[in-house]
Length: 134
Image (cartoon, rainbow, N blue to C red; front, top):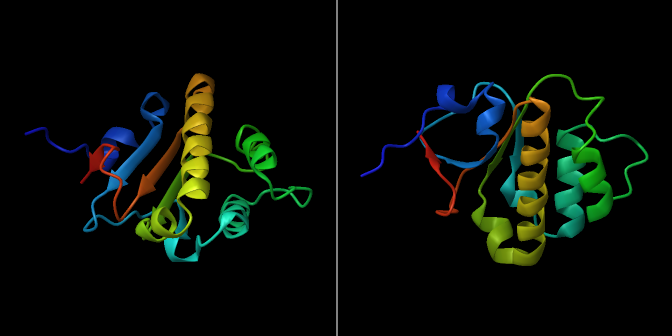
């Protein structure tokens, strides 16, 4: 059985940027939290993301604008650590929009890996396809 990764193995290590599952018993001491219960549609997802990462006022609330902001983040200092809990809600209610968000976050993690900036997303509540962090 493969052992889960530890938070210390990931945080502040840009080469480990990506999306991970966070075990329900693990709490994240720092980072930005988004409640998955609020992610009930495309606009709700974009609003939560823009609020959590302080997107500029000119953010256009569409996927292209989200992609552009995620690959800029000049206004957001330091590493990006994002926790999304209750991920079963968007996965069940708006699977296409949820998958689009995951794709954008994965692309952003890859972009920032090449820049040497930590960008990590932790999901609680499902998504067995991603590595577990305990």
